[in-house]
Length: 218
Image (cartoon, rainbow, N blue to C red):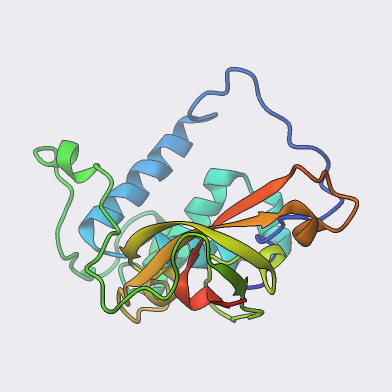
């Protein structure tokens, strides 16, 4: 989705400031947002790509003015209401007003250790891979109205396949409730000059992990 979140290569935002000794959370509520997100993921309420897509749909002024975990919280509110787990009125009131939609399962204290381990996105292959390390590929010039993991700056560019990571859940499909649709995943390396132009440092290489539907032979 071509929204404001996809800002790689965009000018005007200044340099990335690295915070020395940055804590995991800057406020207690941020940790609670992370915990709720992980709990809803364990419960099967939605996938992380639903959360990413919900953030991408935030109005630009909201997205740019919100902190990292504020975006998570706003995306969670969107998924809670869109999927029928609560209403906007209930969120405003801070408590349920009607019996809520049942979760497929709940993250309870006896399973919290195992429940918070990161799930594997690897899936059984559905067909032969099209590319192998060393192949030249061109990324497709697409502008989907929904979620994609192919950044705008890397579209319609020629690169070389460096690695194949096997088949994984396809985020573009998962985020739109169309199922796992497993796809081959590759690391593709680009010459920085092909991405950013001839004045770029000639030693610069740019690597992205690209799903097979993003690629075509070059």
